[in-house]
Image (cartoon, rainbow, N blue to C red; front, side):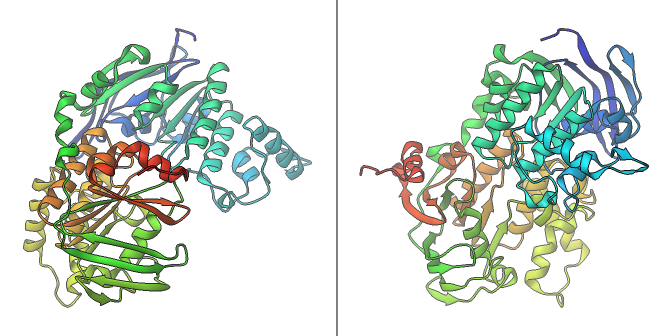
Length: 502
């Protein structure tokens, strides 16, 4: 790995109204290395990337590539300098073909016309390098997120990028897909590309990266060799406090339900699942554990009426109810935080106050409008209770970090005073400090008597929070575990379909 810096960013400053996003931040990237950019949400990672890619303009500072000062005023200029970015939400055109996405804006010409035959041939040959044997004439949205990410990376390679920025690329990938992505990253590293890797999965940081730069509260903490920085120290640098403080949420915090049933499904089904029976008690945190596609989110959506129930019965407090849609669920004191925060959660151009009260307004009905003073009191209450970092209730939610956006969504549903709170991947894509805070909130709500459903792809998180666990495989419940039965090995055996000893 070359020791000369390919990229040098020094004294980078960027302010937004009421927020200092970056304060004298530094970042150095070498050719032929994978460099992790880490920090809590709100640490400044996204803003630094936006400055580097020309999406945002820095207020002051210096950016150098290959020893020369450069000025990047737009994403197109960044691309001309050899800087490409692949985001968590792939920023390609879903309605264009794979080949068109790779060569849009730089199509080869023949006799003054676009040479489609050449484009298709080139796209096929390019994707072979990435072990992708797909029909490049099909529209992009025919393929999975994982394949779309590979196509975005292939495009970056083909435009002769020197720097590849991967912003949370593994959030929606299976273990097999992550392995494939890492093989490609190692191949590109050998070719001399500098790769910036943004992730919240620490295991992946230690598996694939050479160095780590940590930001905290918009400031530079330091740059470290990955193999010389213990995980506990890394976490401490990211959150600015001792790791032991995060241990407040533990198995000892988990409690069994009161025994009083709140909701029961009997032999229920939807278009995606069938024959599901389960029960939720008050004061209980119930987990759904299983691989991606096992049916976890489908059950959550069925409970909330987001997916139509095609069979079976729903009982609340022993009485049969019909939940045809989410409004029915809200009126029956059920709340649901979807796994898709951006598409099904936040309303970016509304304020924090407006985002918090929207579900409560739906519950009350349009004839009982929530007045400004009441809305302000509700918002202020939850900003304080959930420690939401914001200058005011008038701040647009799109300007908050991911962790604080997630807390606003949690506040939205707590404002409806629910008896059953369904949280689908509530900590995905947020930092370790915010994760711990949300885990504490969930266990506190259960202690206060609320029934909670907690779905997470992170097993450790499930083990820490859940007092009962439904294990799913192929959209069926294959086990129900409680108390001391909730152990990682036991859960994994059920998921794998092995015989489990009593």
